[in-house]
Length: 344
Image 1 (cartoon, one colour):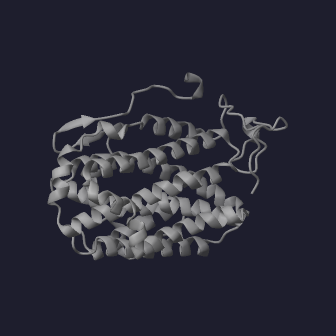
Image 2: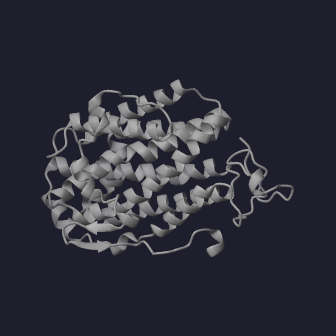
Image 3: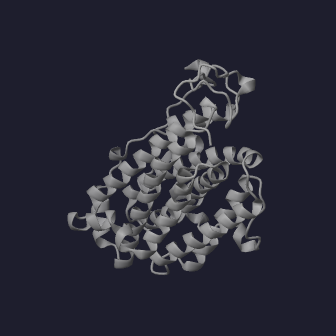
């Protein structure tokens, strides 16, 4: 795959000449006239989602953490370690994908994604250092080392990215791009639901607030890849069988991990509901990029965790975040009537 030069004076950034990949960009952020208008709105939304983890009060969570059951505490630690891995590897991998994007408006969205992934890791560190007792913190950070299932999971995900880094062919680029979509669109959400489940039971409400904000960011990343992948499928060598195989493997691994770390030991979550939700979500993500569901059974057409949507709070107007227990609204969204780059 070609990597953009720092500056290409022979490039042509005219709107009609722009392409997401294989364009002739100067590599300057020439944003006065864009080809991909959806990227303008998405970038603005990503910027408006700005928030600061330390502004969210997790004081009560310190007491709640001490009162969790052994199974809940193990799941809390393991999922936190897993999510830390996911956002860490994205912070490292997305720049490799971005380096070959030749439309500046899309490159800008990916730059914002990288920033948000790094900030999510700051959020996890804030939770660990504030809530988890000092004698347990290293166990959370190093959970992936001591837990065989998590270590294998991390190695598999990272291996898909590393394949492109080691051999940057168009075929491997597409695999890495699809792996990004699976990470952003599938891997986070059983973990999010675990924290929303605790919040629904009046536990770890501060942590759930943080994960609501992370959830909101991740959905903007999902939308980015949902725009990129249909075009990528027109350009890069691949097959539908390859895509379905990647999805099937992702569902299998995600279900195995969730069964391992949560299983049937958490009130309100079962191995059956985890499988149903993971397959339901996979179907939704496939549909969003123009493909048929992988799991056509009727039970995979609805989420078993629909009752937790009020705790995730990602469907409210302007993506504001409501604190369910205090009946107050906290929003980091700044109102704006800007419609395009010129208004900046």
